[in-house]
Image (cartoon, rainbow, N blue to C red):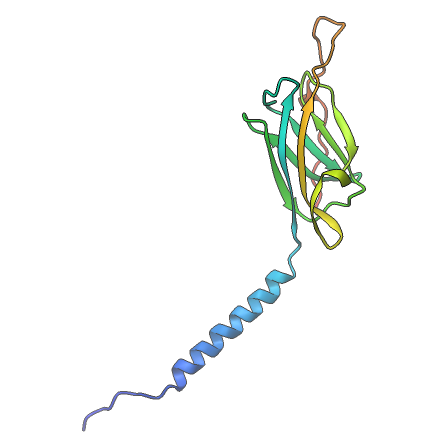
Length: 149
């Protein structure tokens, strides 16, 4: 007696149904995740030379997002969660005047009415030192720890 191959499409159909069900459940889980906030842009001096390292902080009053410039002066940083447009943006670098302002003008992307993308293109002025060039290093100023929202 010879076995005939099983040409029943039911097992294949069942496999596709399970796969679609898993993908649908995964998309629901991922849609429920918090969106992230990014900070990007550049920090230059008055002559257009990149400032490295420069720090960018968004505080509300706790730290919302933090970024550091690379050797080209390009800022980068991100974290889960969003920032209120009423938060404060601070850009600082050793030997340069600190910039402090509201986040709203730098908010380049929104999600749920909150800022999801911070874009900064700034020029910082050198500190005019009356004390033979002594400046407080930006690294000596404490950076608040990032807290989960």
